[in-house]
Amino acid sequence: MSDLHELKCEACQAGAPMVTEQEIAQLMPEIPEWSIIELNGVSQLERAYSFKNFKLAWAFTDRVAELAEQEFHHPEITLEWGKVTVRWWSHSVKGLHKNDFICASKTDLLF
Image 1: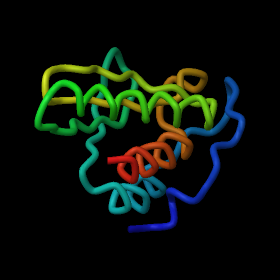
Image 2: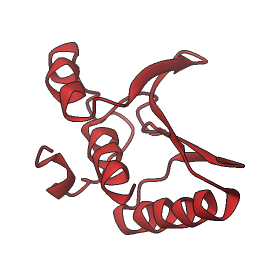
Image 3: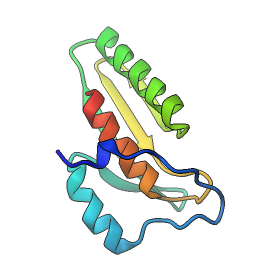
Image 4: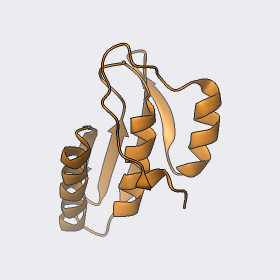
């Protein structure tokens, strides 16, 4: 595993630089289970995690929510029976920032 999970999110405001295609190419191998999707013209990182039951999925959701509060960076989390889907993107820049890759890596560590 990379050291990406050891980094801290930086304050990100409107106008902050999104990651470049070159940066994406360097960062994606560090979070190999994640995909970049586009919704309403906004690039987002997405990964689905599988669990044996609802309670385990719920507990994971709680850990991701705690991470989001610690980093002050908040994803979309979808909880289903035996499955949690997490999507990270930076609302302020309407796309992907390095913070999203940091949080994706930290989410993997929680799993």
